[in-house]
Picture 1 (cartoon, rainbow, N blue to C red):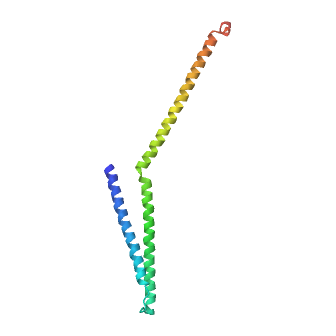
Picture 2 (picture 1 turned 135 degrees about the vertical axis):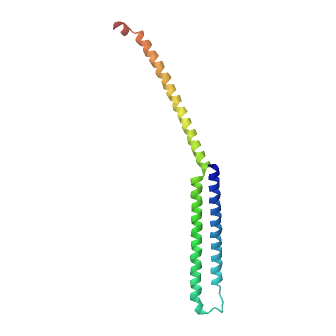
Picture 3 (picture 1 turned 90 degrees about the vertical axis):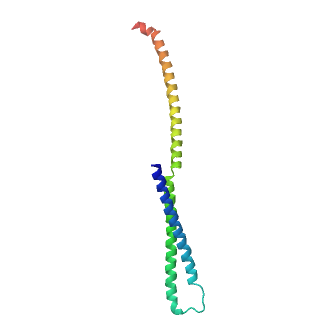
Length: 138
């Protein structure tokens, strides 16, 4: 089971690293291409402006898609870490268990003290009854 979890973790890590590299490269490439496309050039022909505008729009859309993908990747990593952070989960369970054991011991002590007090009171009442005149009058 531990081997399976480790293998699963490794595959998630490899997948996340691949997606991270892909998203970062897409962001950098599209950003660079936008600047390359919109550089000021005196020789540019007005007939090519529509084509360049279209290319910039496509690059901007790709840039935004890569940014959104990166944000999704970050969210997935946070979610995976939260769900699969076994040391943190185990620590939390251990703390709760220790707290419950401590409370249980405190309750046991209170119950033992009550039992002892009731036992003492019963002995006193029993003694009172057996030594009282009511017993002899019945």
